[in-house]
Image 1 (cartoon, helix red, strand yellow):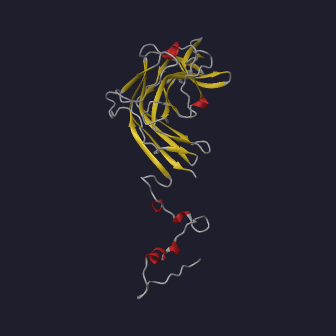
Image 2: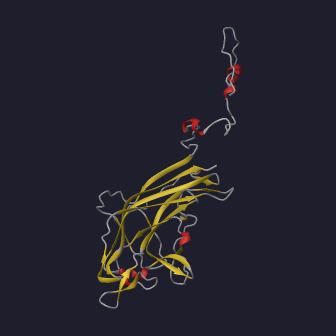
Image 3: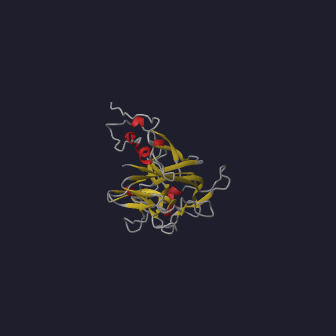
Length: 304
């Protein structure tokens, strides 16, 4: 390999500013590439950092969302929505919304050289009373199976759920213009004129929580006895969303938040799959979703 020969400073040598500035110029490498270095020779601390924005991770932050109630002593309770379309609930602490933001201008800028990665989690417990799946019309929340005592019996599809999804504000730090992130619908489209929901391909930032799960004992593919609801306790639900812009475009993110709608159910219409609201199975407060604390955060990574 090449060697740099630089004699030491000797007694009597003249010293000047230019001499000192240029003395080690031979050691400056301005064109690092695959031919003169290896990735194992480079550590992240060797790269300059500007306001804590690193070489690979431009910026990242997170915030607690929901209610900080470790023992679930007094969770936030959301009632099932009896009309469609309905405005989404914003995840909060029971008094105010808990959001990630406002972010300073220029802090979270997404363009075609990086990627926005958002992650969220929440503690949830779905609750219900009675057998609400038996009251639905379209889409039906139950189907009929043969019963050993002759005839048939209804069995829950166990597909009814709550949908949590991501919104952002890319307008200003005032956080007054919330909208769904790209490739995420707001579950208000009406494929049939009455049913409201979103195509499954428009649920890129959605997490679902089962509203209930039930079971039937069976013999030779026929149900025996009555349907039994499985106990549902507290559980964690999580999700993620990745986004980058078109070539040459950029988006400034000022805030992020998690919202929820329910009950929802899968629905097929004209050969296309949807997740739609199911208001006809709500009777008073018989379907609820309890939630406590979670976390919402993002990181912006360089990709080129």
